[in-house]
Amino acid sequence: MANFMNSAVACYTEQGPSAYRGNPLIEALPPIRTHKEVLDYFKYLPDLNIEEDLKLPLEQRLQCVFDIDDVIIPSPAVFEVEEGLSAMLRRGYLSRSPYDPGFRRTALNVRKALSTAPPPPKHFSKTTLSMLVTGVSGCGKTTLVERLLEAYPQVIDHRRYKGHSLPLKQLVWIKVNASFDASLRGLILSIFEAIDDALGTEYRQQYERAKATNDSLIGVLGQVFMTHYLGVLFVDEIQCLLLRGKDEAKLALNFFLKIGNVCKVPIIFSGTYAAVTLFSSVARNARRACSAGYHDLKLVEDATDPFWNQWYLGVLWKRYQWVPKPLPLSPEISSEMFNLTQGIMAIVVALHRACQIYAIRNGLESVDIETIKKVYDEQFVMLHKALAALRSKSRAHLEQFEDLLPPKEQLKMLLSPSTSDVLIQRLTEMRQQLLEESSI
Image 1 (cartoon, rainbow, N blue to C red):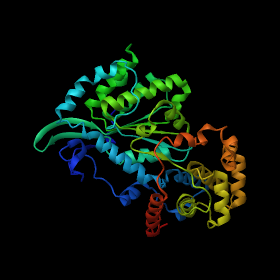
Image 2 (cartoon, rainbow, N blue to C red):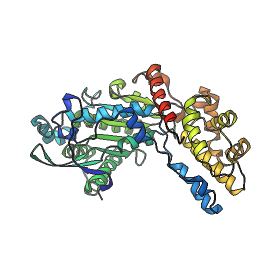
Image 3 (cartoon, rainbow, N blue to C red):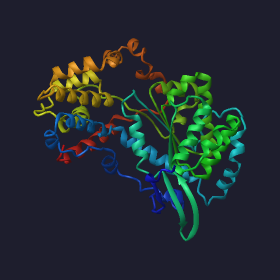
Image 4 (cartoon, one colour):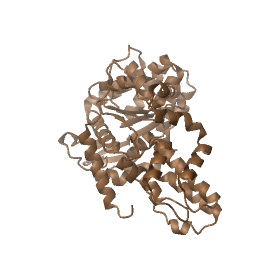
């Protein structure tokens, strides 16, 4: 069934750069956003009436605590990832205008070009942009990319452009999770399914039981990409390709290289640090393979980081507590929460929620350091070893958890991290808006 909740009828506006003019696929996209617009859209802080919630019976108050899971707090990387996505989406359409005779000729031959099995290309072509987003599990990679993608209609229905008939459905983006089936065939079928979910088609059902080879299926998939003008393909949990072994992982990555070279479809890869090993071992030119940016969602370094106290923990602690007498966020509480969670946002949220539930069930008026330690010791046992490894900063301990260790010698092959000046500028913008938010 088609996802009509995120579709729109084309409304054309100039995007700014002269190169984008006259291309209906680009002009149908929302305007390029400012940093303030990105931040306003991205963050989500539920406006709750905690005072009223506190009057509810215990069983109902416990339900309220799960509103914490809806909180979305941006990291400084949100601006750079959004800028990369904005550029790769628009520039990916530059050579794929429906009015370009050259593109139409390419589209007619794409199935043949993809169905053959020549030696895999060594790197993405210069005109194909791609992005890699990495970080530890729970740091917010998927939420970051998904929320930025959802700022665009997934499907745009074109009818007429500048007085001329233009009957087409533009598929702006799709997401596929590589962890569902790490095999190449499973990945191809998952992409067909993602297209079906967006457009209401039945490609997966049509080809799932077919005896076609993988190369033939790739050819069909490329034809579908061209027919529906796919803007961006988001591949999440890319490190899971390694589950089927290095040979299968190479096949899958070569598949993406072929799609990028032939169809000119930009790709966003997201995964844990194991994904860096995957890319550096297969792509000969890793810098070009991440031509729209490599973004490492690093954790905050310690509890004194203003971002930790003002945004991550600060927002959760100050705005979302369902105990009668919440304590202020002291340096001691901040330090303990950081020590136990190591700044991983998913764990911060889970521990904060668990502490609120424990306090409500046991009739506590406040959540203090003793409560936090007790809940962590009893309910987060499965995470103790991994978090202890992060706490130790010991390479020997971190190597036991591949997803936690960023291999620096391989990261250097990718795009260089942003300069400190740029990061300071991004943080300054976010802190300034925080000061303007009177409710925080």
